[in-house]
Structures are given as structure tokens and as C-alpha cells.
Length: 257
Length: 268
Ligand SMILES: Nc1ncnc2c1ncn2[C@@H]1O[C@H](COP(=O)(O)OP(=O)(O)OP(=O)(O)O)[C@@H](O)[C@H]1O
Ligand SMILES: [Mg+2]
Image (cartoon, rainbow over all chains, first blue to last red; front, side, top):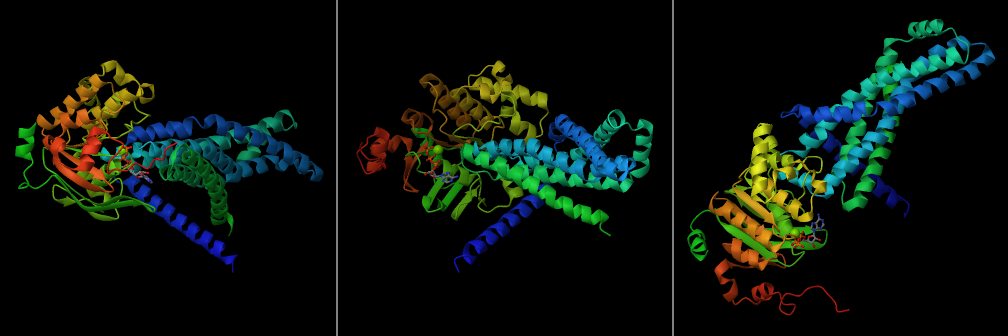
């Protein structure tokens, strides 16, 4: 059967890659908790991931909140259910759109840069040099990035939630003729802690996935500039797919009961 | 030079590095094929050999950056092949390495590159480490202002010298120099040769160098090894390279295209 052979090979390659990623992840995690820890490097990565992603994530959030309000208005007006707009906006943003869109934006911005930087270090023997200077690359390069990704994305998403709701508020108040005070009151009355918390948990997981993929593909890149280019693409694509995939399962974990 | 090799080249002492039957290949390409080499303590050994013969690979195997398929590498009597990463980290503290392409960290200024082993490895305070880094930079002919530059702002020869300063900054017991004088002008090349000799004589380091530069070989080597076809085919004191009677050595040191060493080239 000529069809089954490539299928089987692909499956085996998939298993091999999965095994390698799991091994990479466990090694990286063990270095996140064992000393020495590099606060300086963690701080630098936190600024890189958190602070410098703020404009991108903020812009994404505000336009998403605005378009949500506009779309639900045009839809709900047909059933005279315009009063549900604040609820729709806040739930969509906190549960889904905030974490997913922020995750995807950070994957494009940070994941790609990480893969390129670590990949270049690999192909120019800088990672070998780290090793010979008795500094573990997992500890020096990977662990600070994972810690920063895991902690900064929830903060980013919390800010994105606020900005997104503000976007919906602006459109509703100034374009759709809502009473701003009522809009805010409805928002706050309707939103539940679980909505926000599930979003923040997602954000932590996505931050971890993005930095993990950036580090993994960069660390394993081979063969010059072309290899680094491939690593960058793979990091963004795999992180994006994993984000969407984990998004489903975390949602199921929180809300499917 | 010959008196030094005479008293330090004895076989009675335990070698600092002892390599037996080392095999390393990449895919089908066999690079090292049963290589044996002993390097005595406080000796300066130079490995010569054609481009692509596997000299850099040999150094990386000793440092545990590449894992050989077979063979044994002992450093101070400890087997390093397949050592776990924590043990390897401890053994690597004995080493300093100048990479062939310098491999400087682009994200750090030059002085922090040089001080890296002191700050990260020995947990030295940054100010003190910087002072040592500036001293080491001066030893390779670079002023303190170079310390503030980023590696991307340096010329090729300057990068090489920064790499050299980084390799010797922690005053390691064993130092590997992968082509230390390539890309330097002849005068600076000689300064670097003197520096390597000084590391071995005054600091008592064991040095393993790779070079294509025969003037440099004569200056820095106690013993010379010729790597060909994956093996060390000649090993002897530097004083004997002219009278080795080995046709491979003769061809190499005189740089002749004709001889037993065949380069994979075709006439155009
Ligand atoms: N990571 C690698 N993957 C595949 N092949 C490699 C790798 N590193 C080295 N090689 C191959 O091993 C052989 C020896 O390489 P090495 O860098 O040791 O040469 P060298 O003796 O240092 O040469 P030169 O004097 O030009 O630096 C080369 O043929 C090279 O193609
Ligand atoms: Mg080489």
C-alpha cells in the first residue's frame, strides 16, 4: 500500500517531534525552579514581552471591543435586544477574544523574535560558547523567557480586557446612543469572576506556549540563515495552532459542565 | 623550546587529556575515525591538518559539545563522554575556548563578553569582573574604549582577540585555541603567539591549539600532531617536524600541492 507508508512515516515523525518537545519542556521547567536564577534576565524579558507588547495588544483590544459593540448592535436591534450589548462585549472579551488575540499577537511579535535570536545564537556557536563558559543555556536563555511569558501575558490580557470593554463603551456611548453610566453598570453587574479568571488562565498558558515554541525552534535550528528563517516561521505557526487548540480545551475545562 | 618539550613530554605522568579510539561522523561522512591523542599537563600541543579534516570537531568533542559515536575522552582521568550535564558543567570550568569564529554574544557589550565566565561562572561582582576584563583586553591589544562597543561594531581580527580575551579571562587550567592568529596582521599574530606562550609558561595552563600558520606552530607548540583522514598520523616534539621523515608532515609544513595528502580538487 503506497498510501499507508508516507502516512505511517508522518505519524512516526509526529510522535518523535512530540517526544522531543516534551523532553525539552521538562528540562526547561526543571531549570526554571532550580537555582541559580537570573533575575536580571527575567526582568529584561518581562519588559520585552510585557511592556513592548502593550501597544500591539492594546490596539487589538480596543478595535475588537469597538467592532463587537457595533456588530452586536446591528444584530440585536432586529430582536430589540440592544440592552444585551454590554454583556456580549464583556463576556466575549474576557473569556475568548482578549486572551486569544493577545496570544496570537504576542506569538507573532515575541515568539518570532525569540526563535530568531536563539536560532542565530545556535548557528553562530554562541550557545556552544555559553556551554563552555559553564553556563547552562536552558537556565540562561530558556528559563527566563518561559517565566516572563507565563507571568506577563495574564497582566497584558487583564489590561486588554479593560481596554476592550472601554472600546465597546466608547462605541455604544457615542455612536449607538447608550447611556454611558448604564452601560458600565450593566457590564459590571453581568461579568463574573470566572469569566475573567478563565481568560487569565488561558493567557498564562498561551504565554508559556508562545515562549516555549520560540525557544524550542530557535534552540534546535540548524544550518545558517535559512535554518533560522524556518525556525522563526515554525515558532509562530506552531504557537498559533497550539493556542487555538489549548483554547478549546481550557474553555471546556471551565465551562462545559 | 626543545628543553621544555624534553622535560614535559615524558610519558610517566598521567596526561591531562587522554583520547582513545574517538569516532565521530555526520550522517555518512566520517570525520574522526579512531583518533588517539595524549596531552600532558602544562604542555602546549598544536594540531595541524587540512581544512575540513575535523580539527574543530575534535575540540568540540572534548568539550562535550558534540557526542562521539565511540571512543573515550578522559580529562584528569575522568571520562567525559556521555557524562551528565551537571557533571559536564563542573568539568567545563577547567576549560577556556576560543572559537574559530569567536562566537561572541551579540547581546552583550565587549567587556561583558570577556567577563562572562567571571560573572556567571565564578559569581564575581560586576565591577571587579569589568576591571579584569579591561586588563585582558589590554593583553590582546585592545583599549578600554573597545570594551564599551558591541561585538557587531568590531572588525574580524578584533573579534578574534576579544574571543581570546574571553577564553583566558578565568585563567582556566586548559585552554583551546581554534586558529588564534587567523585574520590577524603578522605583528599582532606574533603578539598573540607570545600571549599563548605566556599562558602556558607563567599561568601553567595546558593548551591545545589549532593553526595553519607554521610560524605560529614553531612559536607556541611543545608538541605537534598531524590530523589526517580522521586519525593523528604523526605526533612529536616541535623540534622534530623538519626531520620527521614523514612525507605527510613534510608536505604539510612546506605547503606543497603534490604529495601523499590529496586535496579533493579538480583542475579547471
Ligand atoms: N555540525 C555539523 N554537521 C555536519 N557536518 C559537520 C558539522 N560540523 C562539522 N562538520 C563536518 O566535519 C568536517 C570537519 O569539520 P571541522 O570544522 O572540524 O574542520 P576543520 O578541520 O576545523 O577545518 P578548518 O581548518 O577549515 O576550520 C567537515 O567536513 C564538516 O563538513
Ligand atoms: Mg576549524
